[in-house]
Amino acid sequence: MNWKLWNRAQHRLPTPDDPDWDRALINYMAADYLRGQRSRRRWSLIFKSLIFLYFVGILVAIAVPDVLDEMSSPEAHVALIEVKGTIAAESEASADNVISALRTAFETDAVKGIILRINSPGGSPVQAGYINDEIKRLKAKYLKEKEKDLPVYAVAVDLCASGGYYIAVGADAIYVDKGSLIGSIGVRIGGFGFQDLMKDIGVERRLLTAGANKGILDPFSPLPEEQRTFIQGVLNTLHQQFIAEVKSGRGDKLKGGEEVFSGLFWSGQEAVALGLADGLGSSSYVAREVIGTETIVEYTKKRDLLDSFAKRLGVSFSTGLLEPMLNWWGGAAVH
Image 1 (cartoon, rainbow, N blue to C red):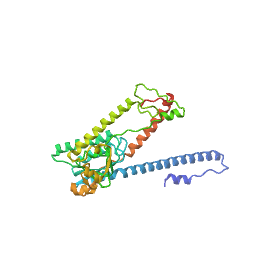
Image 2: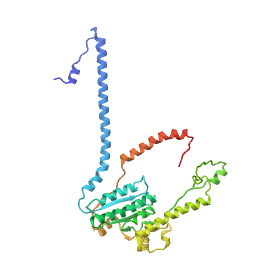
Image 3: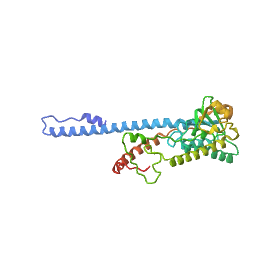
Image 4: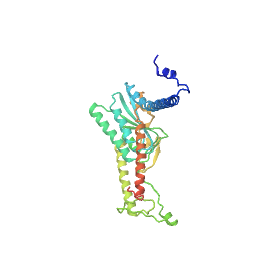
């Protein structure tokens, strides 16, 4: 038997009377120390590998179910896409996430209809506009290539307001719960003005700009009437764009007057009466009774944990680099 452990166990030091005993003891202790170091490195490597595999397992567990859902549903089904929360570029309801899910659904032959389940107070008009435009583009492309229509339905949950409703009017029909809150067709911008408070406490505001209106909406400076008029004009333009999309999507279904576009919101039952929605119904109702299949498959794109981690790491790294630079420049910044 020639095992290393066996050989090490058989190793014996010379007796203390031996003239080479000191040297042999030092050699033995050095060899034992090196063996301990190698052992610690091996265990450290094993431990780190286990941690790495653990996190990989978590990521796989998160990602695989969505893939399996799509792969395991070759039969006819309804594609469900969530539009949940604030509609913004970095949110789960971003245009990138929703549009990616829409494209996957339109490219899947087994999909017989798409439901956008919306629970959103609104958000970016740009992000909502991207989604609205892409719904119409994908439907036209599908009709041209397949020579048939793939219906898209919006289903409101608690809230389908502002940007959420902007997305909904791109669908073929809108279904709501009687208690849903629908509408808020308007545009807003808000802030505070502290210029009088600054005077009262004896603080002077020092704002230097290149461009007469670069400091517009600065909370510590007064808002001149010409700037107020300009901002109101921008809001009015965005509002008219919103109204045009609602009229284009709803057409002759709208029964209300100008109050519909005033920024007010209504219950789902009132929204149906005003023509803002087509009927009462949940996602399962629309799938079963309108589209004609009870099988619903989730197509919502979940947040990419690796990408989120990378972005956080990038922000931390860039902040660490930029902060000393900003301090060196005396805190000056361009917005």
